[in-house]
Amino acid sequence: MKKNNSIKICLAQTNPKVGDLKKNIENHIEIISGAKNKGANLVVFPELSLTGYFLKDSVYDLGININTDEAAILEPIYKAAKDLDISVIAGFVEKDADFNFYNSSCCISKGKLINVHRKVYLPTYGMFEELRYFKPGDGFGVFDMDGVKVSVLTCEDAWHLSSSYIAVNKGAHIIIVNSASPARGITAGLNKFNSMNMWEELLSVIAFYYKSYVLYVNRVGFEDGIGFSGGSCIFNPLGEMEKKLDYLEEGVVSADINLDLLNNERFKTPLIRDENLNLTLKEIEGIINKGTIK
Amino acid sequence: MKKELPKIDEYNFPLIYKHLANFIKIEVSKARVNSVVLGLSGGIDSAVACYLASNALGKENVAALIMPYESSSGAGMDDALKVVKTLGISHYVIDITKQINEYFTKERAIAAPDDIRVRKGNKMARERMSILYDYSYKLNSLVLGTSNKSELLLGYGTLYGDMASALNPIGDIYKTQIYNLAEHLDIPKSIITKAPSADLWEGQSDEGELGFTYETADGIMYLLIDKMYKPEVVVSLGYDENLVNKIYDKIKKSQYKRRMPLIAKVSERTINIDFRYLRDWA
Image 1 (cartoon, rainbow over the protein chains, first blue to last red):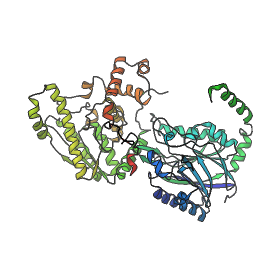
Image 2 (cartoon, each protein chain N blue to C red):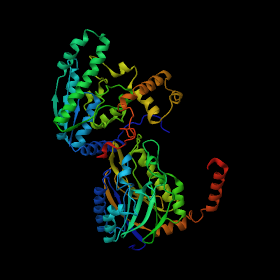
Image 3 (cartoon, rainbow over the protein chains, first blue to last red):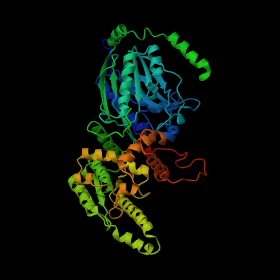
Image 4 (cartoon, helix red, strand yellow):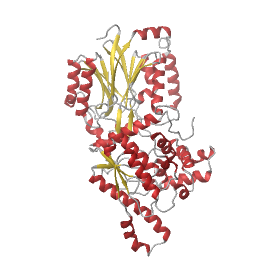
């Protein structure tokens, strides 16, 4: 339960074993138990944390329809969430009744499935090929978790600023970004990979201008020579980084999210209150009706 | 926007170093072995790869093969032994002169001397590869690659020879950056300062043979490949047109060396065409 209008969150920076659901579930359970011991209300895992990321044709073997018996394999997570009175966000390959596959993240709270986010923006350029395998999700939902309004954006989703715009205007107080971001690009004089730097700038902007907490949970490890960068972190509504895990190393960190700070920040800088959704709608309709977008 | 090849410096080195160590550690363990074997020439690339592997896996899990030919420079051997001694890793010296000369005894009579020189170079590179893979089995170790990004892009290597390996920690790092890395790794000075050479014949120099310096080529390749600028854009930034075109041509013409052999598609699901899994699949 929330204490003093704060919620304790655990970021789990894992190294999923590609294609090995069983082993990854065991690892999730272990981390969930450890997080509970530290008093966490919520544990967040990276994108596709139960399967690994560059799945290629094994997407076909790993898809789970969560409304059928196939979901039985996730039972240990449901049970841990129930027994430990905790919420868990984990990434998996979802299959729907029509055999479409999604890059999805489920939120299992106290033994119940309370939300599934299907990644909307599926990068298919450079080293990425998600659209080859996955169907895009159709929205950015906000859900209630222990009285806290949460939205999940998966990796590339967050690079489209419209997604966090939608999430906060729908009422999100905490934006959770789970990702599988490869480390790439170096610059002289910069003590991190360029990709890490881009993420931190982006997350800070989302947190500050959308007056929200932003939790970033990125994975580590290598898949066929591509290394994921870690550096999971929490930004507060002032755009400041409050906690951070090391780059390139597995790790777990817990932090109290003080929701009173949202109250304070949103009063002092009421950007969300003043947002003119009708104006945005009118402009977007104008763009679409011009015929440049069908 | 920066348009120069980024230097590996004291700021970015620690994370790059950690990243490459993780790569070696994780990918080696996925193959269910603990160790690597690599060919040590006395040059900077294999020295850097060797230092990275020793840091990642521990000195007891790295074995170096030193495989001289009769024309190989003595300095190369001394430098290779310096690496072995400094790191405290195990090593094997295997002279390949006999089998190379045996093969070319008959060939020499019927081929032009220039052809023979190139063919001997390739044969030596493949002989070393063959020994490395034999030791890979013998020592239950993966073969660690030592080709840098510059030579891979230029095709300046022997297919199934020095280009062959199980894992290559330095294949995305340009030669110029290999020098940066070497400085931060404290690699013996004599290795850093000597001219790059494949040492396939006496007095061979990479830059002499290629007709340009790695530093210039790397600057151009960084823009062509990493930045994806078209050759004419690279020229507009002040680089010599002939050189840009020459390098771009070399990259294109050697593409075959960087890919698996072509397979004629016959079935509905063909290896590497539409049968697609990570190597890490298992």
